[in-house]
Length: 271
Image 1 (tube, one colour):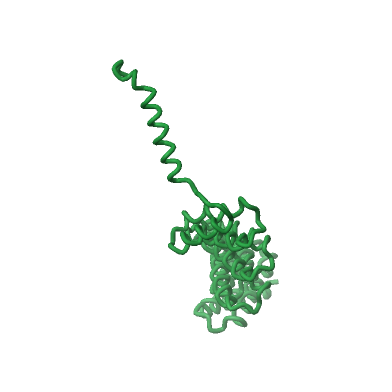
Image 2 (tube, rainbow, N blue to C red):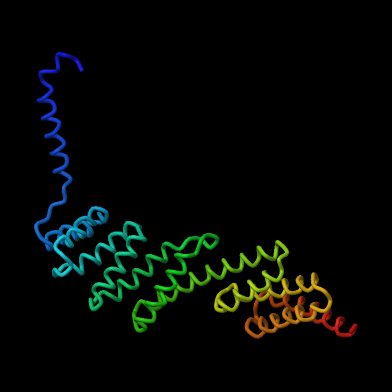
């Protein structure tokens, strides 16, 4: 620093401190009571300034969780995170609301919105599906707790989407086993998809996949084990036709069935 500025150094430091203090004061969150904090947070929330509303809703709890506005502040805190697309925090705050204010009139809505937060966290089918399973758990919990809710149909629609995603995940995993020639694992995985998600569009495809895999598994088996594996392919055809007679893959399944039946007959006649 130039020597000419040394005499002014104390003044400069004082001015810098004042400026910093003014900046800090300008950004400080101020409220005088839980009601004041809630009112300011609600105004920001309704203006769509969700991030700015969060500190005020949190400020309500500086005075405890028993004030008249505490429950509404908790719910709006969850909703502010939700609207900001911070779904992990939203789900956590919804859970806090549901668990703390069990008799509140908005428990039903909060329970549903918590499930939807997890729904938004569900990734595409080929990624880890932990959040998908959590969303299914919370949607099912909502349906069980509020069977007469006006939101039931919407919850069921979301549940169906998530179950279809898990079914596809399982189907693609089974297909990977099949492509790698691990036919027993493929057949069992396809059957698991059908057994777990029989109400999804992947159910009939899974049965067809199980047929293909059991027949390929039979090809690699010693002759004494081939009949049981061909029979498993036939059993899966029977299930497919009984449940999905009009499926677009029924014709393909019929061709596999005829092949499996013919091979089974040949093995029987040779013994």
